[in-house]
Image (cartoon, rainbow, N blue to C red; front, side, top):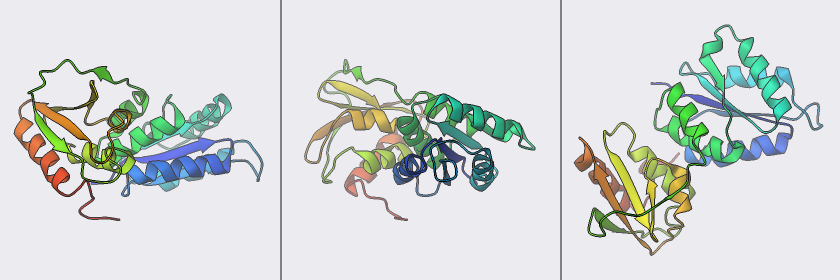
Length: 224
């Protein structure tokens, strides 16, 4: 099954490439193409964006993120000029946060609408932890960086396709375990203990996956 691809459109080549690099850490199997700059200067290039759309397409669709308004105009035009405009979509989202959220969703094999939704909701805030303190299971973060970047992405990916709502709590705040940015926002570092709880039809399976990942020290079982 193919995954949704991403295109990062920016006025700066280095900015587009940097965002693509960061997002790629969340999604090693997702095609992320940078389209930044104009003839070595700041600007946006329609031809570059059109080629990026082609390069990121694997059959599941492409989500396009952009930095500034004129970049959106170019991205919208490039999508409109596709043979099948419905095969790609431009999303209004914060560039870095949206790209990270979209990449994690695409890695988890979300469809085009799911990846768009993840990007658009990238700035979802943490909520106060109002759960029973005995609810769920306490997990020790034995990896050096805790729930940051790649480990958070691995946790979100581990829950893909599981019919359950999973919450991670730490420091009096709660995060949706499928939201990479919310998990990172908890600030849980190596050596900290977080509490994980799940509800829903497949809550037991969700907890099993979380436990397996924790036992591996939040390491990818198949790096690369």
